[in-house]
Length: 284
Picture 1 (spheres, rainbow, N blue to C red):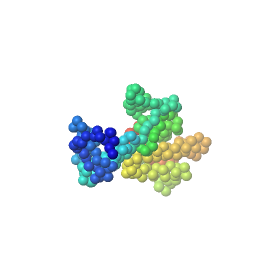
Picture 2: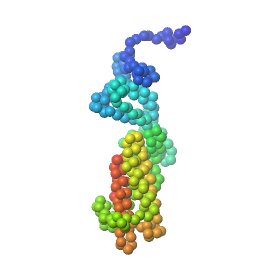
Picture 3: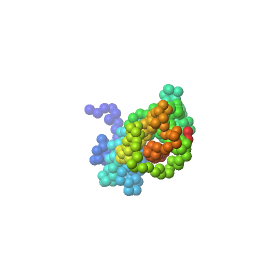
Picture 4: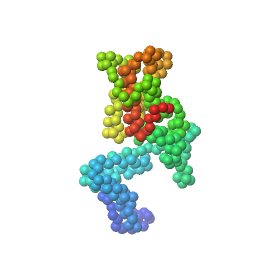
């Protein structure tokens, strides 16, 4: 027995994409009643353009409220490329802005919202890029205006930049160019346990870059950099009470293995921050 709404249905022709042939839940309309194209039709045209430009892997970054779009877009790419092109959709969760310790509520309807440009003007490019990239895309991010401008361990971008500035300060005091090659005697290359731990962490850098790239997980890089500089800052603090751990010796005799370690550390920090698009100031 038909309902009242069903009795009002009118049969009409409609251009559909038979996406059920490619794993979608239902076939998708490409044209509206007025013959104008649907958003999905535009998406197909956009992805077809990328396929024709010979990209064999496509990456889409979707908002959390567009997760339901994945099946239809995957179906479209499979059909357009004859299943030769792979589409990888990454769903990005929401970013919550915190100001004065409270959630900053936004409303497009009221015109009360913050753009990325506003965010950069408020706190600077470096904190925005570093913090936004420091969380997995499937985890909600709390962006605290106050925390990202603090000069403390709680502000990861400052903590990483400060490590690089500290290394530069050591080489300035020793009047050595940080970029020059340091001569070492392999037979006398001795590191203490703290330095070995830093070296072990440095050795993880190539694997970190490889995984970040292959798994499309850029958050691995800022997370790694923060762990790395935490080891360095902890080691630096040991020198406050124990002269043995100081980077600038009072007797004037340079510890070249230690300087090589610092040089390697600076290279990794600079390269990592460069990948993220974040600056590495020499002084702070």
